Length: 180
Image 1 (cartoon, rainbow, N blue to C red):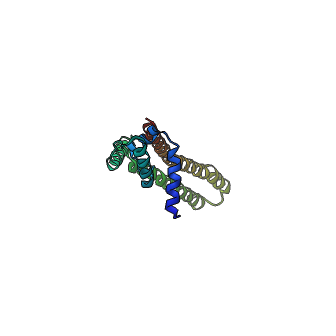
Image 2 (image 1 turned 60 degrees about the horizontal axis):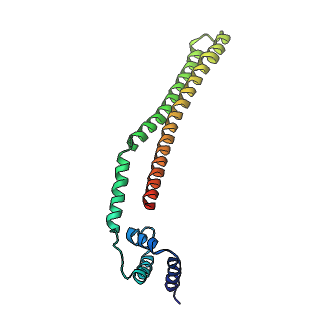
Image 3 (image 1 turned 180 degrees about the horizontal axis):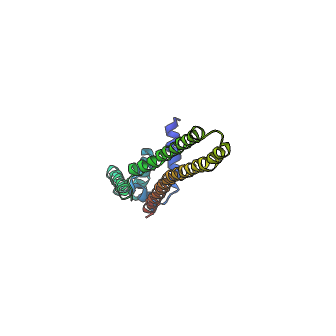
């Protein structure tokens, strides 16, 4: 016995266990993404034998086209433009690095100015200047850097949450529609 004959026999055994109404519904919905062509052949044979006729079938291609249109419409109904949101997140990420670099340069210039702008005899003032002002500036820069990086990541997380929620609601609606 060939592999396809064995598969057909298994499908036939499983479909024979289903009610005629259930088989009619599967036949009518004609969902080729769920059921194979062989399954439809078997269902057709069983329905022909049980009822003497085959019920009408929905056009699968038309059904697929409607599903694609519904998905496209749902994507257009989002409250944001994904490329724009990604651009804002990328800009926040870049701004974080630019600000950090600016603070580091400012800190370096401050140290340089403190070392060469003052009389080296005032070592206490030099150390105080570097410690209080320079480190304060670098801490401010790091603080702004962390905030901008957090904003960028928060944007990405919110987009992911929205996409997952959107996909979940679409699959739930699809399942509910399939149960009706």
